[in-house]
Amino acid sequence: MTNTSDEQISPDVAYLLQEYNDKEENVTSMTITYGDKRVVREIPLDQHKTHAHPTVEINAESTDGYYTLILIDADAPHQSNPVNGPYLHWVIANFQGATIVDAHTLCTYQAPKVGSDDQHRLIFLLYQSKDPISASPIIEQEKRRQFPLKQFVEENKLTLLAATACTIDGTVEK
Image 1 (cartoon, rainbow, N blue to C red):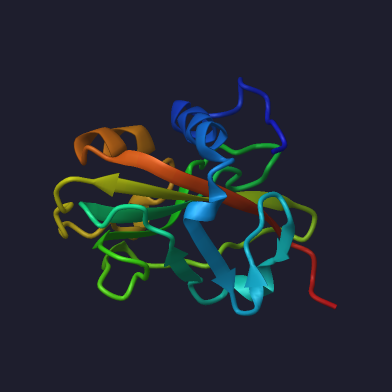
Image 2: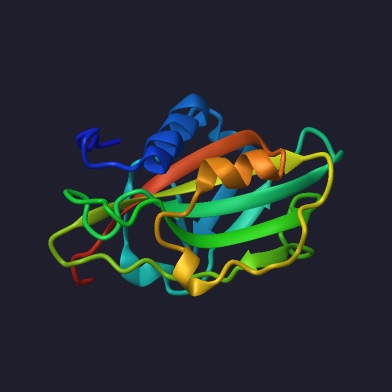
């Protein structure tokens, strides 16, 4: 993934990138698809394909515990100046099994918005926990910017299982 100067990123973006780098090779644990386009690490995806939340399938080795999926933009508002990152786009929690059908939405899906001259890194993080996460409060709109990812992970006793990412291209679809 493209690196941004350490001086410009928040501690939570640094934590996010470390989490991603530690698990990026384990992408077989989940399959994420926007329409007919599968999310493949580092392959650009046109933002017009991301208006609706993706389809998610989990290749679970264990049915114990609960899953949480978090979608974060590491580069908000601009890759060269990610002062709003990590920006939270989606959190679903407490699902068990291979699909997200029974998931509780903690933060509703918000499609990424990327400027025409920019690309953003969208990172999907799949966590597992022994106990369900409290379904309330719902994460409000104003708390998406500079989301305290590390604090959320620690408070909810989450263990990272898998991570994958794609870049969202802001150019207009041809």
